[in-house]
Image (cartoon, rainbow, N blue to C red; front, side, top):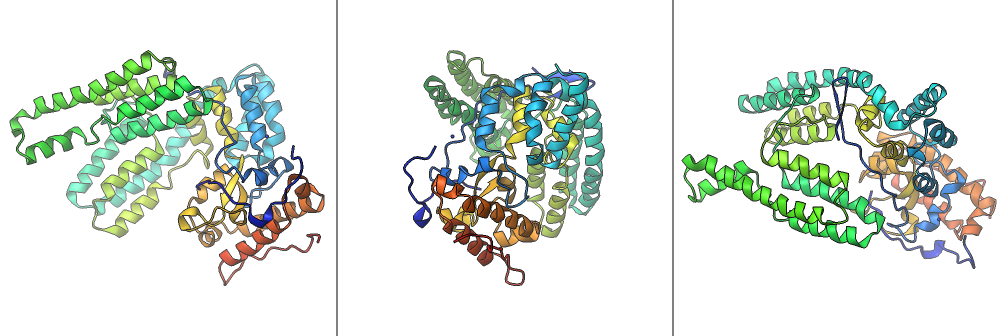
Length: 464
C-alpha cells in the first residue's frame, strides 16, 4: 500500500527528548547474482516514525499475528554484511528472529541451520545452488497440473486465439526446459527495470551515481515504445512504405533502437556505475532482444501471467477469461512455496538471499483505509503491518480483507493487546504516543468491518 506523510493530530504528545555471470548447475540456468544495497528505512512517512518506534518492542503483525522485525535490525544486518559471512554466523544471527518469518522463510532458515552443522563455513549462495536442481524438479511438478488445466480450458477459445495460446505455451515450455528462446524487446519493460535499478542506486546517496542514472533514464525515453511489428503496420497504413520492403524497414528500426542503447552504453562506461552488474546485465540482455538473438531465460511467474492476460484480453468470453486467470494465479509463489523460493533465489548473491529472507517480515506503516479508497494521511488511519502483509493486501478494502483473511479478527486483538501493554508500562509516554491512538484504532476497525460480523476489540485492560 502507498506510504505517505501523516498528520499526528491529537495523538501526539511532545516530549523533551526521544532517543533509529550466469551459473549453470546440473542443467539449471541460474540468474546472475544481484547486489543488495544498503536499504534506507527512514523515508516515506516522516510522522509515521513515531509509530514505528514501537517496532523494537515485539509488535505482532495485525494480519498474521507474527512478531515483526524492526527496521533497525535489518539495517544492522546489512551494514555489518551479516549475509556475506559464514553459514554458522548467519544462523546464529537469525535464529532469534525465527518466529518473525513466514512459514516458507522459516523452513529456509531451518535448512540453513541443518547445513551449518556439517558445513559451517559455507555461504548462502553455495547452499541454495546445491538445493536448486532438486527443488526445480519439485517446482515443475507443482506447476505442471496448472499448465495442463490452462491447456484444457483453452479448448473453449476461438481457433485463432487457441493457436496464439498454443504458441505461447510452447514458448513457455522452452523456458521451463532451459532452451534458448527469442524475446521481443519492450521499451516499457526496459524502463521499468531501469527505474528498479535506480531505486538501489539512489539509496546509496552518491551524487555522481544519481546523476548518471538520471541521464540513462532520460536517454531511455528515445526508445520507440511500439514493437517493430506495430511500427511497420503503422507505416504501411500511412502509405509510407510498401509491404515488400518490410525486412529493410525492420532492419532500420532495430538499428535505431540499438543506437539508443549505444548512447546509453557510452554514458554508462564513462561513469562511476561502469561496473554496476545489474545495469550491465540489463544492457546485454537488451542487445540480445533488439537483434532477436535466442537466449536462455528462467521462467518467471509474474511475466507468464502478464503475457497470458494479453492473450486473454482478446477473449469475448469474459467468464472463460476469468477462469483461466484464476487458474494461472494458482502457480506457486516464492512466498508460499519452498521450492519456488529456492529456485528464484538460487541466482542471487548471499547478501540478496539474506535480504529476501527477512525483508518481508519487517514492520511498516499500513493505511487502514487505502489512500486509493480515500484514506487520509493521519495517525488514526495508520497501523503497523509487515511488508509482506502490507503488499498482499494492496488496495483491498478492510471488509474484503476480513473475508479473505478471517484470522485478522484474532490477530488484530493480539496487536491491540500488545499496544495496551506498552501504554500501561509507560512506553507510549516514553516515545510521545497518546492512548487515544489505541481507542481510535479499535473504533476504526469496528466501523470498517461488516455489520453482520463486526470486529470488536477488547480494550478492558487499557488503564485510564
